Structures are given as structure tokens and as C-alpha cells.
Image (cartoon, rainbow, N blue to C red):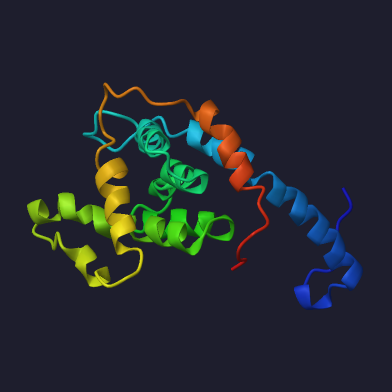
Length: 185
């Protein structure tokens, strides 16, 4: 593999940056496969839950699929908690950042805020504000986030639920991550 000569970015030439851009585009094209491989590893969970993180993700996406949600929302439902592994204190924002270039503003917002919306179901048990989500009450996607959490996310911790497989979702993930990006950074 050819490499650049510079050791400081400011010394790079146009040709070197064109080479790096080519490599980066190839790497970007493999994003869906890396995500799917990462998802396969979500077979452990935090102590106390009856199912794995992978199963929770599959259940959430299966419920979205059965409700005939748009394909990008199904993929977002599958990936909504991928931040749990590396960013447990801001997992929603992490997952939303991964999805942002490939999904609509609406889907991005729902994933980004779902952690605060989920607090409705448990925060009061921990002495926290269960109505944290109310600060978004006038937001145009508020009701959509409510539905995402109520119908799919909070309901997806059932060890007896029959989920679709990750392999069944793979073509959707590959399709969404092969889109021309909506936004970059």
C-alpha cells in the first residue's frame, strides 16, 4: 500500500491527499460490514437484564419492521443502542452520530434523544426526573420519539419474543450505509 511522505498534515500535497481520500472512500464503503460485525459482538449485557444487547436491538428493529416503519427507521431501531458499549453515559448521541450522515433529520433526532425519552419509564425509581423528555414537548419530532420509545424500545426486553435475525436486517443496513450522505460532520 502506498503511503504519504508527510509527517505533519500542513506539509501534505494535493496528490497525497487525493491518495488518502481514495483510501478513505474505500474504508467508508465498508462501514455497514463493520457495524454488522460489531453488532454480532453484543452478546453480553449489563448485569440484571434477561436478554443481551443484541437481542434488545433485534427486538426493537423487529417491532419497527412489523409496524411497517420506513427502512431507515428500522435500521435506526437496530442501531439505536450501539453506543452502550463505548459511551454508556451518552449512548444515544453516539449512535446518532454514527447514523447522522445516512439518515434524515427526523431519524437522527429520535435516536439522539431516545435516552432522555426512555427515562420516563424508570427515572422516578432512582430519584430522577422521569419527565426529562418534556423539555422537547414543542419539538416537531416529539411525538415520533414518544412512539419510538413506547412501541419499540421500552417494549423490547422480552426473552420470549421471536426476533428477526441480524442477517435479515443486513441488506437494509448495507442499503442505508451505501446512500449518498445527507451530511458530513
